Image (cartoon, rainbow, N blue to C red; front, side, top):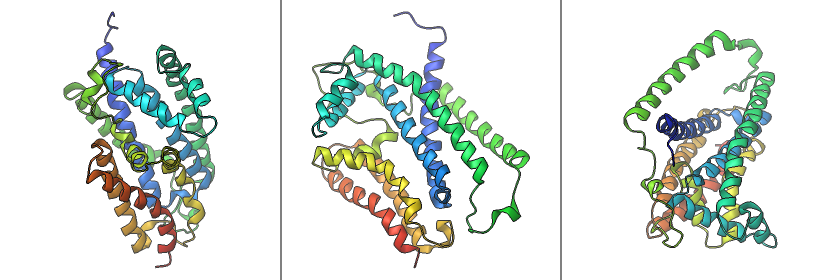
Length: 302
């Protein structure tokens, strides 16, 4: 196959920008949790939808290189989809375009991977409109009209400094360590016969993969996999504190930082094999991941 002009540079930028984007997304969601941004329901809900769309887009792109890891990861997802009662097989055939993962699947995933960013861009502007209409949250829970700050110049200059620093790190990674964040299995050509010893997704999916793997039942694993993101919709409904931020509730602060640590543990466990103590760690990590949300509602009164 003929190499595209400066295709190596485009490929390096694409890989590293995707990783950097997920770092920023997770930090943004974590910051929104800590400072109570979920109180702005439309802004929060549109943000969660954005996160879901980005995850779907990233997975479709993950399969496109058709490497050993990507192909067998797609097979794992296919088996998960077929576990859905009644309509599982029909849904799998509709998604894959046949009875197995093949060239038609790649074409459909490429189309989705190309079209989904336009949908994401539309939801992104809707997210900004909700934020502009409602205004940013105030961690104190006070009337924000008395302390408004204009977006320009304060926030534009502040954000430009952060973006400039991030671009410098990105250029450094692209130039010197372009594949540092990429799994080595992505360079192994697809083999339809030989199954890899360990199948795991990219690092930004590992926490969800650990949750999926911690449930023996396939249907239960699918439900918890979806709920690991959808449960963020529940947080605005269970928050009843007068203050908007976790920092004013010591119990919530402790829970929050343990939840962040637990997220990192699940990410680590998702990369390991199905052995002890990783299996048990994944089970306990999954339990704490979901218990965090009702526990936050109780800790507001402490």
